[in-house]
Image (cartoon, rainbow, N blue to C red; front, side):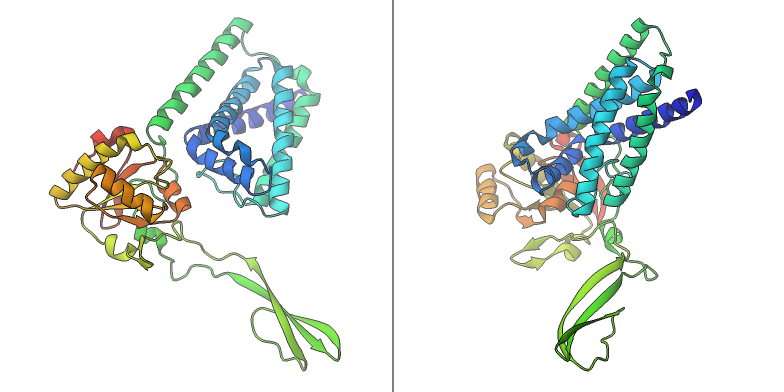
Length: 364
């Protein structure tokens, strides 16, 4: 039993630390995922949406600290109970989400590792089993160091987590796992290889034959049935290839200018997924930076999901010399974790991407 507990202790501790650090690297992204849980009928707690960012930071720091406490064997009773309660809650959450198809990606490992809802649930079941082993064998969880050393290590871990969270919140994630990272080409990210696997569908055709319903299942072809066609139900039984970047548009008055703009040699994007929620104090600096870019021959555009009226208000209030285009809010949130932010592109390749706190680091 002792060895089983040790193995479980290492696996659970390492997974909690890795998972927590990946999410701590991008707490804003994890907060977007929490908003999905709060608003899409899983937890049904829309009043928590304004608190999503604070909750996300608290949860991921707790996740990292519990993993560290488990590995060093400090406060084993408290640690194991906390792990057990947490995994029971998340196992319920991932099962409910998977069964009712509420949230398609749990965000367990941020954008680094994508898991389907059922994969997320399976992962939590495995963790639940391992934590139950720890719960029943907690007498074998012994401290690696003296109590004073453990307190110091725990305090240092909390401090470092807090400092790291503060850094990425005021700048950008230290490691960017998204398809819009610096060096990525957006057109290439949207392309589909010729040999990419295609989606496979199953069709259940319903006919009325001699007054009774008859269902014929095929892989696509219309069945030869001597009866009246009623309807058909389509089920995707195997997903096809989905490019890393999809649903990316740069629209104005219903027309998509993405292909044209992404072929510009020198393009600056001012990204603000929601102008009303953006940090409006920095738009004077945005005006200065973009004016400099225009003087140096850059094409400058704004990208937002806000209304045309609000876009026009910002242009007039801050003397902006560029127009705003429409891009889906979720896409803009994925592109950059700052509202606003600025990207510099060369023929669709992202060369620079900065938080509004780092506008002075842009080089044209």
